[in-house]
Length: 492
Image (cartoon, rainbow, N blue to C red; front, side, top):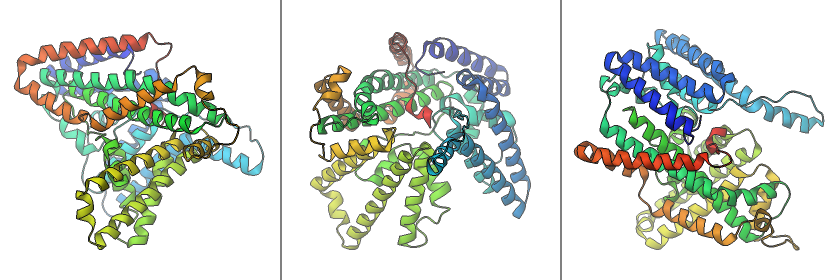
């Protein structure tokens, strides 16, 4: 079920909200169970065949978490390793088995005739969420004795499909707070407004520019070679499509959670404003970056074992982060590309700090502008690998972006074939770029809205009414389209 559909907005959400607060007035435990059941239904509506896999994963991880918490000494570590192996094995089977078989067939020049394995939606997110829970339990940070609360922690529908990746300690105190189960007009009106902002990002901005990215990437993957302008405009179009698609989802998830008096961690902090690749990863998909740092980079040794080992750990972490996004060599190379970026970034900062230039450079306007341009262009180049379906297509795009266009290439042919105007694509990119770089961050806007709603009760009905009208209009617009596009991160 998509957040952008009439079924979700006009049926599912009102029923779940009414039931949650109706049960919450009498028994918070019943309200939590209702929300857990509603979240499982939300998942099953999209992929009913994998609902049992989700519930089985929850049951097994809860049981293993109990074993870890109840044991002492080496036995606890054995249970932890068992849980992590089971989670990763399940993820590997569903997400990477096809990739492994395809590469093995290509290597051996044969065809095993094995059927394709369908990827369960959201499996990467709920698997990482539960691995984090097991590690936190082993470290003595958390312990969960209530199956319903644990199930709700994993399945809470705003985050279930595309994140953020949650920590048990972020959610359990909220589920234990009786105030969460009582309707709060300030939270509901502010949450509805933030949901509407995210809906606008997805339905108008991301879906609006998507055809200009597809018009280039699809034929290039099929063998066409773009000219330089087509390659850059196509890459920029996807850069902004991905940003507004995923940040739109994140805003909607936060807004929906606020309606239930629950706070999710912010997952975006204006990443295209970053002045370095390290800064970019502190701003983009924050929950995944934090997970990779805390549960992969640090256990590998982080920066504690010397400069060379630090760079190796950075590279390994980013390659595995790329592989997490998808089972293809394009994602592996995308991760490796960002790993190389991070190595260069850390080496440059270490050199300038050693020479005593760091403070002067950070205060220099020209350097900061140059750093922003260099970071943004580097990110755009890497997104080509992220978007392209084939390595050959990605290579053709990068060649054209670098100015190497084969002789005889028909300039503007891809736009003409798609019936699109390059001037319109340039306009889209300019507008969306300005919004991404110069507009106020939606997290900050949301916090200010919430503070205003709490301080000025009289403003709640007008804000809620305006947001509701806007949301209804956007959903209707989306419904009238030939098809509703899923969020990009649903594929991961």
